[in-house]
Image 1: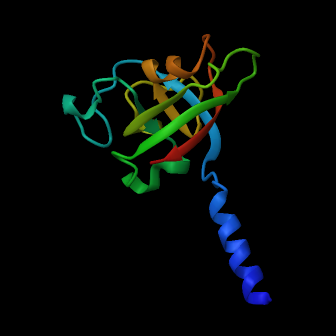
Image 2: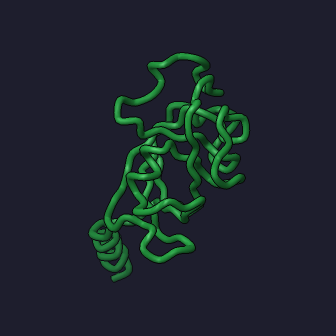
Length: 136
């Protein structure tokens, strides 16, 4: 009986998809983006989509975050209607936010998005947003 229960629970657990996303905050930054802490002056570090970001202290991981890809979604902001509904972007980490050439719109956020990335998940200008993010 106990073996059947364990087997049943194992099968049921496989039917449910568990989310492994974290929540944090995001700001934006503007050009100049070079040089970066990850790749210096190399222009090829930026994806052609311009969807890139600088890592905040929480995800920097002593530079190991360079090149990591994250899915990012706006979940809320201080002004209603800021988040673009059902929009998720994929960004590449190319810099460390505290040492970036351009200062973020809000300091000490989890991630600082390029102008293109930030506008891809928001409907209006704002300094920071609350996000859900997941490394892929």
